[in-house]
Length: 182
Image (cartoon, rainbow, N blue to C red; front, side):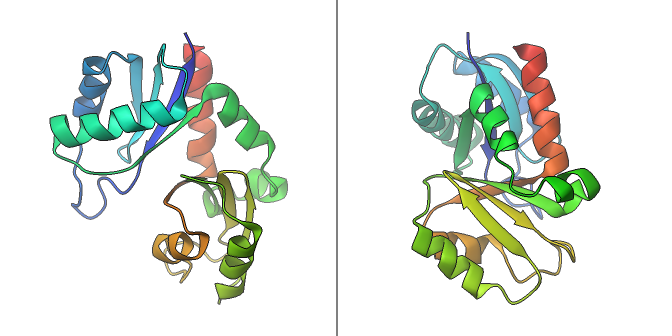
């Protein structure tokens, strides 16, 4: 049975969209997903499913979260194989090795057009660097993400698609959890 990694968008941020990880694991079980594990409090899940479509799993999880948890949010699901591919596609290997907390991987609902990526790059006012490949984007925040003006709102507006990001440390921890299930 294939293993998947799921990311919830915008949960447990400043008291908004509060979701207990125990409730999230229970939701996975209720939906027939097996081996549900969570990582951190930011809505990261690893599970197994007979459903072979990430898009179908996203819809299932989004509907389930709204009905069972009362939270309307987006899920971003990638197979464990796709997750390994997005790690391998990282265009910033030096940053991943030397300062992984300042490297962000964004899962996108759709692959952006090249012109949208260029528009996002043109909108950067700081030292951030953005590259996109397929339905992922990678951003280096050399001065940290906290004070950056390159926000998720701006990113989504310029790319024309929904997004959620995780720092490189979390990306690698999720990969390890998926490997343990695999």
